[in-house]
Length: 308
Image (cartoon, rainbow, N blue to C red):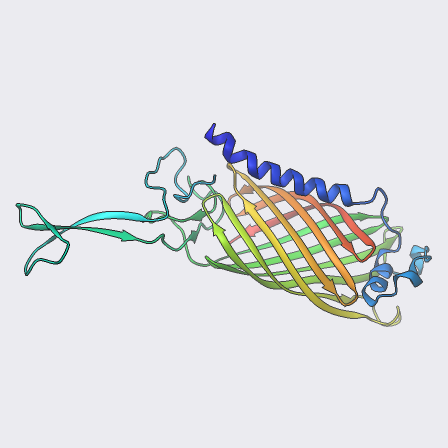
């Protein structure tokens, strides 16, 4: 029953998030996407809505990660231990002496700073994070991961992306850049970059969970070459919430919700993925749905992430 309880909440959250992204996505994709993206960002979407030619343009255990099959006690937020030290001087206040001449002192320590494994499910450990004082755990205070992915957005539009993250116990530096390309008969006719970068705080890190929230900047960089038209650029803000969940070897469940403003366009982006961690690499698949102004950019994705 305890195992079912641990699964119920995460599965419900993931199903709701993925369902929301799919439900909000239209049945058909918008044609001439990249030209429409520029129009939405500059705030002149109505002037480009009639354009149609594509060739024209554009729970988890709070005791921390432990080897599979092992048990743990004392799962509260503090840890206590009794040390025996010889007495060579006057009695300390509050200390208890036994007949052997030793003093017993009860020491209560705060929860230790979390550490990360080198990759999810390293060796025989469950999850990704170490949040106890296990001296044999290979956890560390600094980590990073790098992902590359591709997505199909429909109507000849494809997206390739790189996602980099530098990880500390209580914060992360995060950066994503996507290259969107419009194609006609397999030939590229338009391109632009969309991305964001920011700082995330980690309010909760346990053996099976990493929950993050933060914000930063959102940007657009035109990818048209000289002669294809005027290059356009835009800058705005971005706020996001997300989590990684490590339910059982080798699964990694990730979700992220972004709310942003890119010049004149409001952005809401939902993405959810499920991956399999194979050593330091994770092969994942999922769905990304982004509403940029009145335009939808959505589709399935596949990617590979390295944990370092």
